Image 1 (cartoon, rainbow, N blue to C red):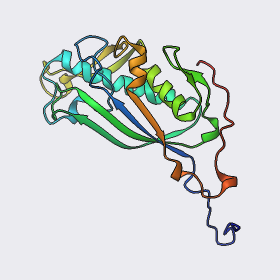
Image 2 (image 1 turned 120 degrees about the vertical axis):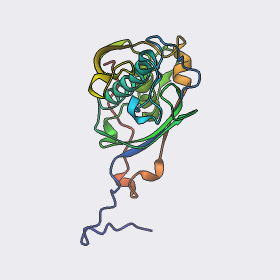
Image 3 (image 1 turned 135 degrees about the horizontal axis):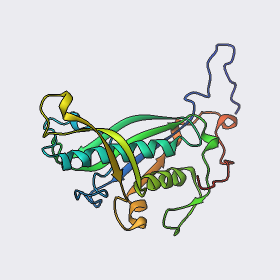
Image 4 (image 1 turned 90 degrees about the vertical axis):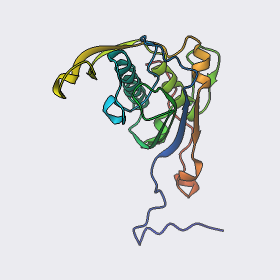
Length: 213
């Protein structure tokens, strides 16, 4: 049996390009206390909820979740351009005071061979051997980070829409004390059927050796 590529017709068997991974972050065990450790990880802003956060402290939790999501995407794009698809957020209710419990999304990396396959988890307990594990490690680093950044924060104590948005320094800390449990909460799976059809176009695992950023 042989595969003949239809180049004459301008059909590329290399499509879809890149490499796809699904991500699930189970967050029920993450703290939701009104501290720098609270807020979990979510792309949702305060105005996305049907009922907005009722206090500034609760609104800051939402902003911390946004900040961790931003940090996560920054880390995932260190080696290759990546597209984000199919985001599903799970909350107990559509209220700003309700914490996120689960986050699912899909990542499509433009240059799959640039994704390393070696490294170590944030607690140093496990050696990374696959691209999916490397992606998991980058997400875990974002959830374990100490970081401060200025953000537009919804303040329900203000009056009028302009007055309710304040520029505040938002600080995030580790979502939970046990680093190993942060790693265990993250599941990354490659969607192998998304790869090109022909063997010569399938990305190999001869990726760059990972070094700490």
